[in-house]
Image 1 (cartoon, rainbow, N blue to C red):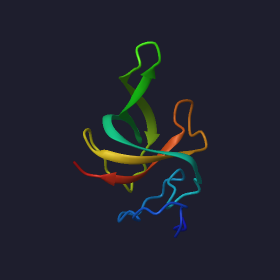
Image 2 (cartoon, rainbow, N blue to C red; image 1 turned 90 degrees about the vertical axis):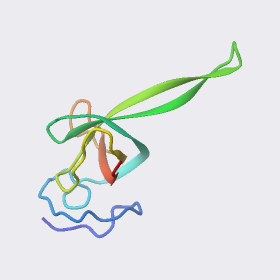
Image 3 (cartoon, rainbow, N blue to C red; image 1 turned 120 degrees about the vertical axis):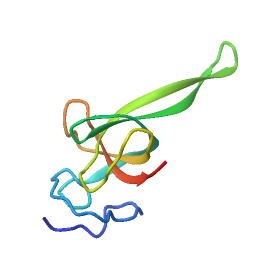
Image 4 (cartoon, helix red, strand yellow; image 1 turned 45 degrees about the vertical axis):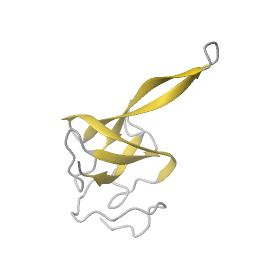
Length: 110
């Protein structure tokens, strides 16, 4: 497959090549929409990782904030190697499966 030089976001290009069609760097996947950074909490699925990050939700009645967590499933191409505890950046793409709408674009080791 042909390598893309620009994916629309300023992120480092992965060192390892891959032949995954859903990879935004080596495949045909286009990126759009939202960008999230979170911690990998599950990596037991095939090319899928579950990312978790916390956010604050305002409760008007008590005029306070509470912590909530968001979990998102993301596709991880073979050119990235992730394991539980790593921090990764994901970006929205077209639906890859029923629950996967995001793909990994950067990995920051723990």
